[in-house]
Length: 343
Image (tube, rainbow, N blue to C red; front, side, top):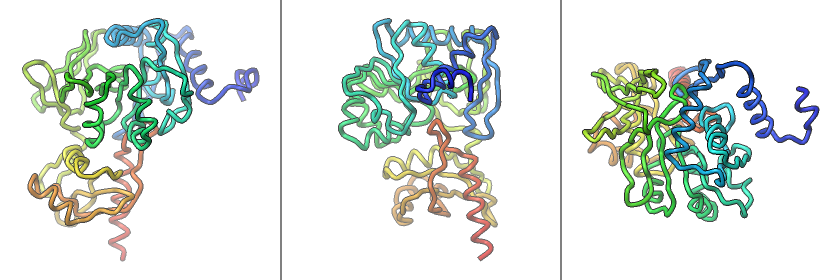
């Protein structure tokens, strides 16, 4: 047990995590060790310049107009870049920081009397909040809501568009120190496109992968596939490493997931599975029952190759930040296939 925990035994886990982060932040070191999310592989350790983090936080504070009298709500795990940058934004803005433990529905721990000016949530948390009409109404009372880390389910986008508050979806990653571009989801100015914050530039290479120029002079070459428009807005089409090669036909996992989420609210994910003649095939991983006939009706008119050849009954593996754990999902499908081959 650390001296900190001995001295303050009443500290909750989130308070201790915050204390640990602040100790690192105010240490003499100019760099902060941080792990990448691990959504497509093992998390890797990188070292981030604290000056760049402060610059990123200042840009966000100006963009969202976070004021000293505002209450910023932290309900994300402290090891994520989203949580760390939220803390720094509150420091830069001199705003009040309210901390509650990270959970699928963070409103469970939020006192009803608390008014929230700014909160960051994952789409996974949003999906759980949407199951409670009371908590959904509380969400709509938060002045600004920033979603990030994963796509928002299609069935929730329509509900968000009519929201009276400001709700955004962010694009960014650990290497860019959280968001570099924002998509407005609510109001008459809701958009299907992301637009960069001041100081950031996103362009695409010859393979349509995003190249991100950061304000501090660094350039990130990502595996995100984008479509860019003349107004400098862009849409995320998927990832280079989220492609299924089925008999030479390359299928984008996110495209299939987006189509299915328009028809079903079940938890699921699409992943590659071994196939004796095609090499890989489309597998659907879900804890719920799916009607193969309906899948055929939904997907065949768009692309018959999208139709899952395997439907595997399993929980969808998630990372701590709510993203689908693609590596574990693929491993589950591969192990399921091997077990079937033994029968």
